[in-house]
Amino acid sequence: MRPGRADDLPAVLGLMQVEVRAGRQDCVPGEAYLQRMLAGFDWSSRSRVVEAERGLEGAVLVAGRSTPAGTVTRVSVACGPSDMRQELLRWGLDLSKAAGAVAAQMWVGRGHTQGMAELGAEYVRPWWRMDMNLAGDLTAPRPVRGYKLRDGTQVAGRSWSDLHNRSFAGHWRFSPSQEAELVTGRSPELSLMAITEEGSPAALAWGQVESYLEDSRPQPVGIVSSVGTVPEHRRKGLASWLVAELLNRLRDDGARSASLYVDRWNRTRAFDAYRKLGFEPAFESEVWEANLR
Ligand SMILES: CC(C)(COP(=O)(O)OP(=O)(O)OC[C@H]1O[C@@H](n2cnc3c(N)ncnc32)[C@H](O)[C@@H]1OP(=O)(O)O)[C@@H](O)C(=O)NCCC(=O)NCCS
Image (cartoon, rainbow, N blue to C red):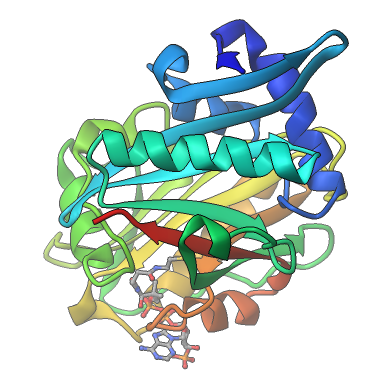
């Protein structure tokens, strides 16, 4: 086992592909997502790979994010043999603990959770990927009386983070984000906001177009990456309006299918809204968490 390097990425992606074929992960992350996720990633301290003569046999990457409760890491492993897999996961958990994280999460396809309990982790959440095909008729966007639709070409700076953070405040494991990390690299035309007649931000929906290798979805895929309505404007149809508009824009940008990820225990039942727009569950991940305190 040795520290990973940025030039291991192609081989790591190959290992991730094996994870997908085995049903342990839903897809190999798309390029745009990976670039964001790995920007500034410190390979030498946050990854380990197992190298054999014919190439990499296993890899583990540890990413962290701060939450009000402390840092929560995500330990991602790509590796066939189960004993090596356990060893890599154990390394990721030990690193998380040494770095002072309060919890470490591992995401794995439903039914592929052997060894999780032995690592001291417990099952905390089911997580869905929901998909829809964008061929054929899409739900027409239904504007909501008293609100106007804006996109990133029309919204002044600093408005997104406040709206985002207020909409998601009650979401599981939420952590507030700064404006720059939310808007950097985002397409303005695929960043939608509903505002009141007086100009107060009320709801948002963001999208991006991604391509995935060896993937059963019609490519490219329009990803609906965040949907939120501030509590005082909920249940008026704002999220449904914005997502319907976003799906049309994603299709105009070339997307042939759409996907999103949602907490299966989401208290505001976001998945019901998505179902009404045509999304169906396509993959269920289990989130396992080791409490490191
Ligand atoms: C989920 C959320 C975006 C919905 O926003 P919204 O603007 O209220 O959504 P809509 O008014 O378009 O509602 C659409 C459907 O969602 C479902 N829904 C929305 N809020 C619900 C609630 N509190 N309880 C049950 N169902 C709800 C309903 O099916 C609703 O349709 P209906 O009003 O015809 O019954 C909003 O509640 C929210 O921001 N939640 C916190 C953040 C979050 O979880 N985002 C989703 C992450 S994937």
